[in-house]
Image 1 (cartoon, rainbow, N blue to C red):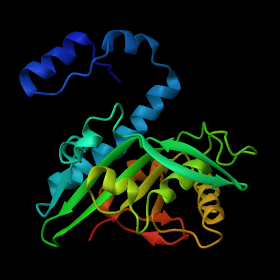
Image 2 (image 1 turned 90 degrees about the horizontal axis):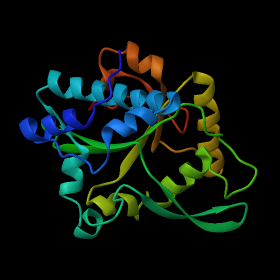
Image 3 (image 1 turned 90 degrees about the vertical axis):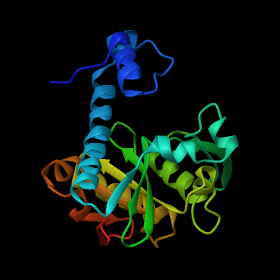
Length: 229
């Protein structure tokens, strides 16, 4: 069963648990939410719950929530109309244009004993967006890859937007076949080199795995990677 919170429920959470109440009509949103929106939200939630469980089971791992990341971000980011919208300049087919990418979730893991923090931008993919498009201005997953790459690396523009170190992009999608096309898109965007900044898995693997930190992700280089230190 899936329940959508209404205005009264949002008010109770704000009153008793201090959960910030967004300036939206939750009851109206529930009426207009369609199947694809609900499935996308649940896919994002599945991954969030898995990392929440891991942080509770291991005393040396602390979850860094998106609210905490934003609270510590530079003032310009905190005051932005949409602080999660990451601007980037990308080049496709020789054409340069400005785009922005909005992760479905941003979070971090603090490995306290190892004195290491890792940050992640999440893409919950329901296979509704084409991986490639014939025209560079059309939205595609390939365009998202280019946008993330533009704000990564030594410059780390996307990380600096939040005052954090470099990041990795976790993509949860619908099937292994879809993963293969995405990894091919990463290799295309990096002139065949691939990139370990992008990690992929499918929803079934997330749901079956008892420990998300032990789950093997497939990188943009085609390598197997675990997130646990």
